[in-house]
Image (cartoon, rainbow, N blue to C red):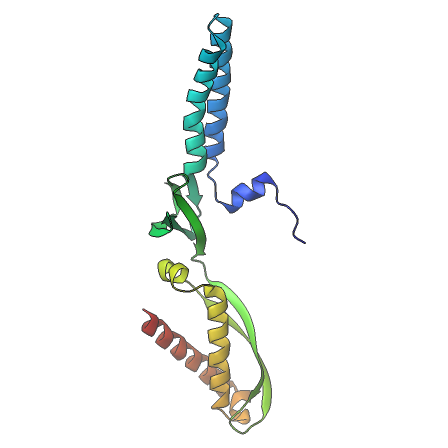
Length: 199
């Protein structure tokens, strides 16, 4: 069972800019001071409560509208479910209630370990191969909108390509350094071909 996250962890997950809570707190303090000042001046409570509400509204807007993306990421912004664009890095604004960020795309080089278990070589010898895939997202819009889980898709595509390449090689070739280099080059060729056909 997952542990409930703290409010700070939830805000960090939504990439809330530190400016948003600070602006909200400043508006709350100013509204409280103004409300007390108006109340001590003998004005009705409705006037002091109205002043507090008027100052809280901009603070709430900034709290829910201001977001921040780190240098290595892009936010996919949907407005009422329709793609509006990519935002980031840096601070950007959303339209509260209408805009949402379902996906944050990381543009750093990713590392995915995978294996091809019980793969048959060309001479029908079963081998287990472990590999590490280094990859990066070039097109955040396609990664977010055209693939349900792009990380899993990349891992499965790499594993399938590795199995296919091993199936075309003899066991002796796969064990040699030259054979491993050939596997690397063939995997790169397959990956580039898949990228070109997807783009």
